[in-house]
Image (cartoon, rainbow, N blue to C red; front, side, top):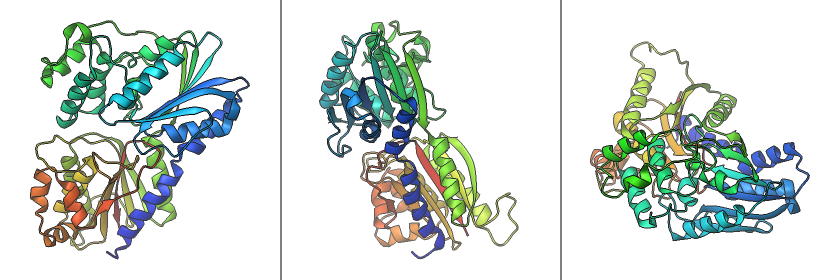
Length: 420
């Protein structure tokens, strides 16, 4: 593959990941606070190790104790006297519960003069979990898996998670009171809703009981869940928390645009709120690409080539097949089918900024008009793969997977279409 857009697409990803480094982002934010006293530290999510390390670089021995809960293989080593635990994601496991209970016990003992620096990033919903009285880990796992496979968006999933938890939906902030919480957040939720990021451990629920019950009925969860627990009172006001969002999909898309412009492309950020089925998003973006790349007629679009169209957000996949993949890979495979046979210098890439897409070792996919043909040459039908939710093996056969490894951050997904 020697097309300019293919090479440049990969360069933009590599450069962008460097700009999203939570270590420096958190370090600078903490230094601005000019903290003069000892504090406790708690970090949850897929970016929690990097966030905690950034805080440690700024505070050093002022961190009197700390706990980090991150995803398996996301820790990069010791951080002072901070205890680091790894646990399951996107479905919680026993290791996560053990670390979470320890955190709850330790920080609920803080006093009025104490400060807890709470570092929150995407993935915290699964990693920080203490089941509510009468709820088992198995129930939470089953509900999470069912909602994920049903194509529910993150706000919907987290609305139910809060009711099953003893720490979500502002309950952790209540447990820590009267200690003060300073929360620094890397948002992986469209619209940066604090109630949905990590299921809002320091924020009251935005959805009421009727909304939660509606979700339970829609996804046929009635048999698994206890109405008494779903209808219980949740925190309505939190007074001991200050929070600041340090990074988000809006910031990431702006960074991608700056990088592309330096490489000679005109960047256009079309949305940072892409939310729909991954395959449908792929078809729509491919239609824009075909309109822009069609040389036989004057394009009716306002975009001037060479250009990059940038989309941010988080699509979903309603799993109907038995294959392997993730939402970014499915979107990319959908585009590959729509662009099949196109000879223009057009490249589409879609990747998760955390470096993982679904239950795979890939971050996403990068495709051109020849990708579908390359998949067929490997003996795989790209259309059947898409229908079976098996985008991973199809893209792998065409050397079209994006593999970054864990990036240390998590600000949703970025999709880019490059044209020359």
